[in-house]
Image 1: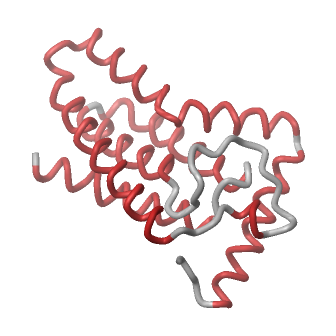
Image 2: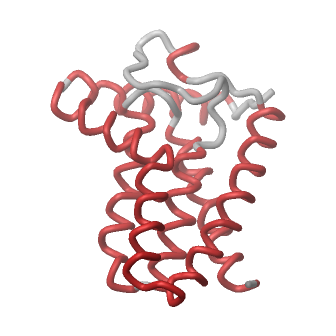
Image 3: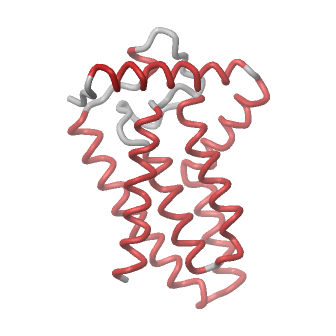
Length: 174
């Protein structure tokens, strides 16, 4: 089971509560829900299809990198989730309210953030003009997770770090 040192867990709890309080604002909550839903894969699949339609074979290296990063990312985060068994913050912190839909039972790491970061790095590498849009979207995906009460901030940071390593690794090795 996942366990941070007590002082770090207390900080993580407090940051989770503060982040989650933002979900009280309906407009922001609705935006975060939409971003989170798009981060389930919808945005990435749509973007990949658009790139293929627009650029044809020129898009294939980026799409291959995204496919490899996606498959590896799912494997990594599922392995970590089933070994750390960290409950979601809304399950253990009384002041955190779930305002989104969790895709699975456990919290660590944020798979949404992992994929958003790895895909953004890959897309920015192959299509630099997309960098502002994809990185902006990745930041929104990462922010949505604690705002909706689905993840601790440390889950999001871990997902971002893993995603960055994965994105850079796939680019370097393939």
